[in-house]
Amino acid sequence: MMTGNELIPHLFRSEYSKITSVLARSFGFEHIEIAEDIASDTFLLAAETWGIKGVPENPVAWLYAAAKNRARDHLKRNNIFSKKVTTALQQSNTEVQEAEIDLSEKNITDSQLQMMFAICSPIIAIEAQIGLSLRILCGFGIEEIADAFLSNKETINKRLFRAKEKLRNEKVKIAFPSPSEINKRLETVLTTLYLLFNEGYYSLSQNITLRKDLCLEAMRLNYLLIENATTNKPSVNALLALMCFHASRFEARINLNGDQILYEDQDTSLWDTELIKQGEFYLNKGAEGNELTKYHLEAGIAWWHTSKSDTKEKWESILQLYNKLLITEYSPIAALNRTYALSKANGKQVAIIEAEKLNLTTSHLYYALLGYLYTDVDNDKAVGNLQTALNLAKSEADKITIAKSVNKLLNDNKTV
Image (cartoon, rainbow, N blue to C red):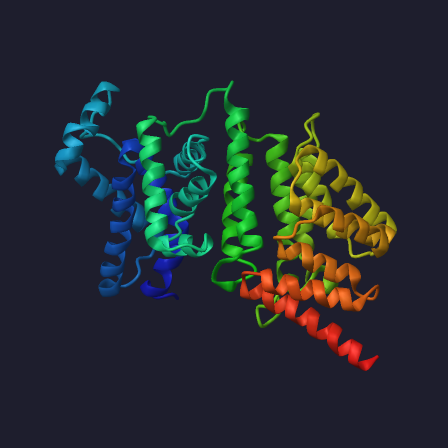
């Protein structure tokens, strides 16, 4: 059985966001810091109490009871609340002394969903949306968020403070958007979840290539949208399918030393077939209706990547999906990935011509791709491009991967 010291960090990650969302929904976004403080104080109390008396039989129920008590005490005693929140509650015909903090499963889910829509408001920058999502919805500490953004605690604190002030000043409510607004607002929420997952899947923080915790939190929040009839849309299912397909290859992407393993070198026996099946289920659900989003196209590409065969049909299918994706929403990364697929479908010579047209001279990924394409075509050019990629790379993980490719080419040339 876990000790209190071992259990509390785990519970903080899973329960802090639930308690905060429920309290903030009760108090209003203008008092989000008080909700966060009460949630944090609850865990401090748990650490003190459990250290002396031991872990209770039902730790989660204990936390919820403690949070309710602290919230009630705050409503009764705090002067700020007496003047501001009490008035608001009375105007809405709610008896303050009887106000119940509802930590039922349904209310927790509803509160987190509504908080998601409040945080993912287009009135604040996307970096702030992700930062607030990590803090309020995922229970990440400020230092962890700073690592994720390659920043420092002071900068992140200021960013989150400014974002909260903006949401307060604009009187953003913790509530579902109106039916006429749901699709527009949902698009912003999906963008945030997509970027959150991508930050974990290709993490620059702490020199770690993969941060599963970020990916899993994005998947959890996405699943909340699917569970709700109002937000269970084809695009939501397509995004979760994309995440499942990528997550299915987690164990094959990193070796025991934490180094990245390139796709064509992965041990396919480590791919998670159950996650692949789940991804197929959600992709089929996403195909219902006439909607075709970038998430559908990327999920299709990711599905083909779960095929263990290395056939021309596979790569031509991936290439066609990239062609559609670039028309739907162009991005340099998608263009680079399309060129890799082109090399697999039609050969490196054709791909080199297309790759050099991109001319993404500030990207280490561009030169890394050229290094791959020139390998066994012109190894001197391959080495030159890889060394440029090495100079441009920022994360230690990328540098290690590129350096290995350079060394392999140099050793092969010596052997020849």
